[in-house]
Image: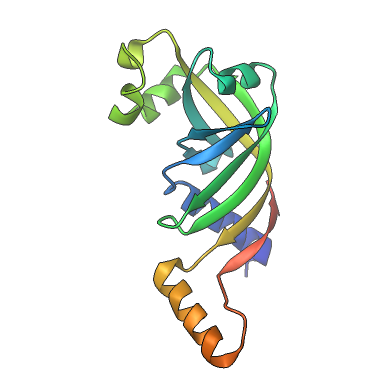
Length: 158
């Protein structure tokens, strides 16, 4: 039987892959970024432009935070880790999409396209039961004077 931290880590990787966007905190400035979860390699990939704050921070092998609040994916997380530029054309090809292409004049062939690798070190994670479950818990708490059960919460180390 899996312990709580292992189950929460599994839930994290399952749900972060469903998240559409979060905020990458680089040097005190939050930048919206779409995550591409890669559980097998323990990486969250980002696609950005050369010259962006994210690419600049990644070149310095910077420590960053990535914040997710995605009700559809049923995950909220404050993740700390390292950000680096990745020279991995195959991975970039795998992740490339019409959404990514919209940000670059020459699409995938644009010279400014950069793949970044975010390697989580620690995270505080809230894995919820979704909107219906939350509404039920709030209603139940108001009727019973109990505190709502908003799902699993804890800190994990990768």
